[in-house]
Image (cartoon, rainbow, N blue to C red; front, top):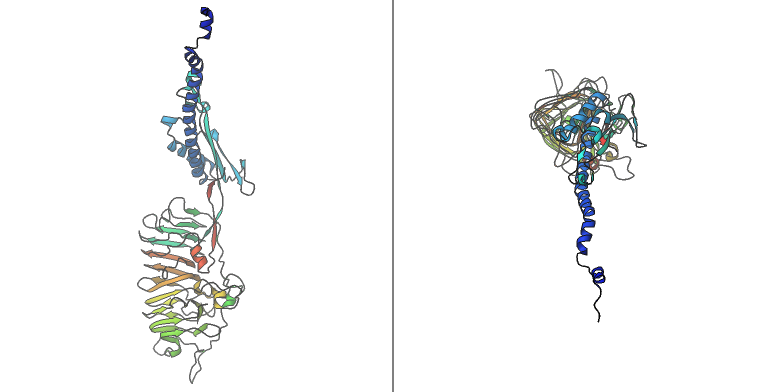
Length: 484
């Protein structure tokens, strides 16, 4: 067979073809590798920029409506996350916009006299003189990236359950053991805290119509200038108003004692304050087991009730009501206890002009759970009318309503609502809830907390009080959120 000509053999020879292809494709491979490496770097920077924008916007929103302070805060936070020395100025004033955020339509409108939102854009870009340099794309003529991220933060009001509401001022003179964790303290006046910060605990929140001391609770949990919270439970003038209206208090059957002859349980009797005063009636002295039962599950005491020994109160499972008319509950160094399964509500009521003391007093202890929620369809039982209430002062009482609960005086181990709307109430020392209950709510005219005591630690979402059958008051507080 005749050999092929040399030129044909050369044409058919495939040796070295791979090298030629590699030479042709090498620039493309280098470009793809450079894109992958520098693209990953840009993606990482964009993620960092987004977290920086979120932090700067969120921090700045807290300072609104002061736009100057908000802008300065945004720049400060941006520079903390991405220092100028390594990243240049990632946030400049031209990339900060304040405006109005409308929750219903989820829209942001720039400008406005009282902005509630702020939008920031952080950049590693040529416009800021800090474009992100590439490592390999320079080979193909791309020496830098422009990377940016935008975040909008706004004040979005949220509802917070209150565990202590003062219709006036709140004062805490605390130490490191005062514990309001899981609690919002709301003052319709001012909130003043003296002591090491945070006085009320690291998990507490504080709000007031007036000022709030920096020492009350941690940064970001203090709210001043918020709307007042109206007493939701009762009214001194409208017997039908509120969740626990005064119309629920049984009619007062008490009368003055006769000038001569025997007295009855429905005759007023008080502890003597002067040598010639009559002695306290035996009807008004309790010791040992006591039962609150009958169809009404109610016991009414006319005047003072004094313990002469430890008392155990037994009630129906739907609750019992102890009403003290124009008098005090003198523990006299003893304890009044209602065991589990015997829920109790104590009501102090009487004439609006009466000047006797209308509160617990004397060294001793109160230990009981509030009346539980009523069964479906129940509108008449104690549970239906007083669910969640432990202690209730008639809002029509204006004298003899102030008192102190202390570890060395009246010790409170109660679960539920302490409703004393006209009282200047003082908690000193340890005031604890009953057992493992997670609901202890106070409404008072003013509250002063002294000393060190684990007082309010409870469920911050209010679920503990819901289980106890108590509808807590709520405050609408500004909540700063990233909305876009």
